[in-house]
Length: 217
Ligand code: GTB
Image 1: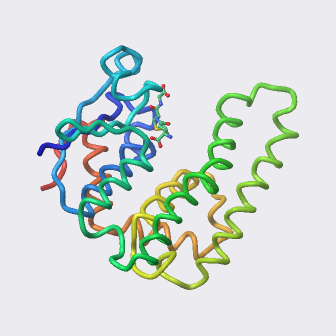
Image 2: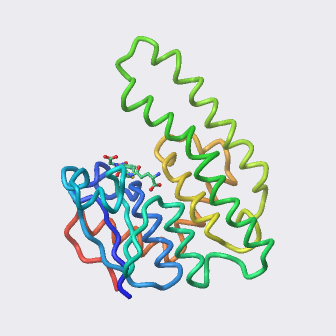
Image 3: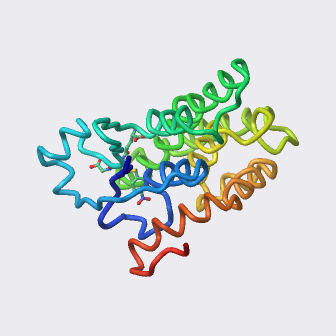
């Protein structure tokens, strides 16, 4: 059955891989599932046809036969459940890997998003300079805790899993900030994720949309 996802027709990051379709592409590449992409404009995302797929008018969405999903956590979980390669076989290890997916989305990503929102939307406010250190402190708090837990392991819980895919995707949002530099093990963890052939293919495929080049086979 054909899998179709949606992505930005024009991504604000011009193909740096920060829009959330990249994590879905990555998951599909990890499990070896081919997929098609429907590009949508900001206007199209708010129209009825797209809202029927995504009630909040966002990307990415995921369609497979009569199944339509939104939310990258749910999409990556669905892919990981249906195909081998992203979740361990053993029930407890599987539950722990799923826990890391939730931790990435619910505990680590929110302060990172808060920082982005502050920088993008509040930079002109009088209180911005006073508030930013507080927001960045919350990001560092999480990074410190995550760095301590990861220690010198390659991945968060044994073999690479959907939990690592999601955590690396979330941490990538900080790459240009320099905030990860204080945590050499997290920097290496992110680099390890980026070096995976499946990530390389996913990144190239999303970049190709904006550069007009075709992704490598
Ligand atoms: N919780 C949802 C999920 O995980 O799927 C969040 C989905 C979401 O935020 N989608 C964004 C969107 O559609 C794109 S990824 N925004 C349009 C809108 O809400 O109208 C967020 C994103 C966008 C752009 C960059 N960038 O250019 O750097 C980075 C991240």
